[in-house]
Each structure stands twice: as structure tokens, then as C-alpha cells.
Length: 245
Ligand SMILES: [Zn+2]
Image (tube, rainbow, N blue to C red):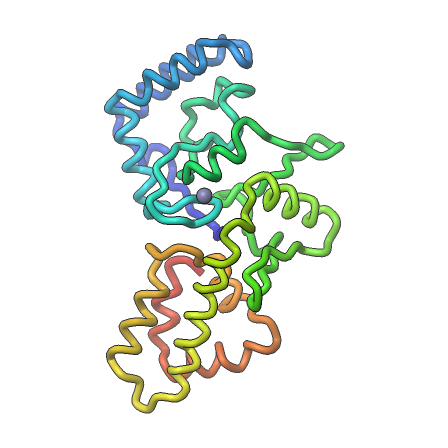
């Protein structure tokens, strides 16, 4: 998981789609939670032009990746605040995230809160996941920030979304990047092939950048020298990671 920048509604959506969402939202405000109208309306929304426009707008800032697990080819519209409990947000742009069907299915209509009523799920457009997660670069496991408040949110998010089901994929990703950075230090001059391969692995379109972001933004002690030296030798790395760091 990495931070996402959701554009403002007026910048992301055409006027017609925005009007459609506003009209449906006015209707939804009159509907009680769990009313059958909610699922009926959501189902018919799936066949509208507005739905296609929302898909395009989500993909424009999420690059087709799941906002939670970062798998590519994510196609679901996820309601951060579940539509069943919050019908007024069923068609609210700020409540939409792109997600894969596995994360969407795992979260379903859960929206856990702590004893003070504060939400316990991380919202990647509002929170920086690195304030909560400390991934283990040797196993790919999702570590938790030890601060009690942050830990509760990190643990709940990891468990509700079952984020460690992709531990192996995350590990493979970070191992590949670490290997390529190591090669940068070994090769003089750095070959165009290596440069191309590293750039491709650091592209914003690639999955599992959250753990790679941790390597560059908050590198664990043992990797600090490698990250610093590789960036000194190949300054373009900064440009490649800039769109998502
Ligand atoms: Zn996912």
C-alpha cells in the first residue's frame, strides 16, 4: 500500500457524470441504511455511462492497481465507507477507491472503529501507509508501527484486507529491486539494459511499490548505504521514484 492522490471531483469527472452522482446522492440521503434500494441502485449504476467514466477516472490516478494490495488489473469500485451502512456515500467520489475483487470481498461491508469511534482502516488517499506499516524486507511480511494508536489501525487494516496473502509477491519485488541496485554498484559504466530493467521495476504502473517506497523513504539501517550509493551513481533513480515516493 502506498499513498494515492485522488484528484478533486471537478478535475476528475465530466460535468454530466458529476451531475448524475449529485442527483443520485440527493436520493440516497433519504434512504435508510441497508435498504434494498441501495443494492438495486448500485446494480443499475453498473450499466451506466457514468460508471465507465468513474472507472476511467479511478484508473487515471490508481493506474489500474488495487489501492490496498497494489495488484494490477484491479477492476472493482470499492466504497471505503460501505454503501450498505452509508447510502449517502454510495456515489460520492471521495468514497471511491480502485480495488481488486479479493480485497473488496475481504473487506465487504466492514468498517471497524475503536472505542472512541475513530476509524480503524487506513485510507491511502488520506493516510500515509508508512506511518502505520513497517514491512520486513527479508520476508515481505507486514510489520506494525509499535505506537499503540497506529498499531491498532495497521493491524486491523492488515487483517481485514488479509494483506499478508501477497507476502511472497512483495518479497520477490523487494528482492528484485535490491538485486538491481546491487548490480548498479557493480557495473561501471551502468549498462543500458540494467538501467532499463531498473526503470521498468520502479514504474508507477508496477505492483507492490509500497515496500519499495519504504526502502527509499525510510531505509532500514542495513540498506542505507546501498540506497544512497546507487542513487549517487545513477541519479535518474530519483526521477523514476518521484511520481510515487
Ligand atoms: Zn487488492
